[in-house]
Length: 295
Figure 1 (spheres, one colour):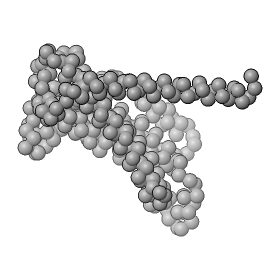
Figure 2 (figure 1 turned 60 degrees about the vertical axis):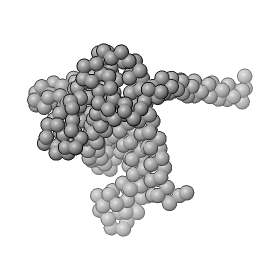
Figure 3 (figure 1 turned 90 degrees about the vertical axis):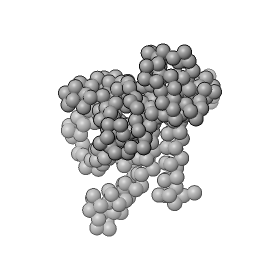
């Protein structure tokens, strides 16, 4: 077999592997969506669920999922941005930097259930926060930090060195160059990573079972005072998310149509994650065109 034949065989094998992966993904998407979407209605999307049987809608769980996501990103993004800038621009190539990167790798490899148990012991039990939105958001921050930090570091490192030299040659300080030149150029990659990590957080369940709880108390959506126990913005109330709700229906649900409810909620969760991924690609491409002035 000559080189051309070997290249042709390798190309065919790679194409078959890619086709198999895409085929499996399409099969899962079609199966979940076809099983769940027929049971989705406006009442299902906005209604409240029964705390015992799990029957009813997912309105509260949907709100809890987005609320937890917003709080998690508000906590994790500034920390990850600072850590990414430090590692990409200021950290020296020594054992301390290697130790930091190793710690990030270890943290990113932890199973989510371990992060959840850590959050349960520290925030729920030790700090007496109880099962609450804020406990879940802090636990998800530990889950989200490694991904965001690595994404920001790689986005900044991908910026051409000539950009840095141009800023310094104009008399700008290193920090001014970083904020005024490097960060805007790296923004498309950073935003893409942020949106993708948001989709990952949105679908998380194991860590939230032990921190945010498995109940969705009745909330008054006309009361937006965060200090009121019945307010949906109260960070100290338990908050069952959509992913946890799916798990609960499948393990503890007593509704006669539990399978249909689980399928419908799963379809909504899949659509939300797909929208996050599609939005990341579109937003990243849009920002890249704006920053680079390309068409």
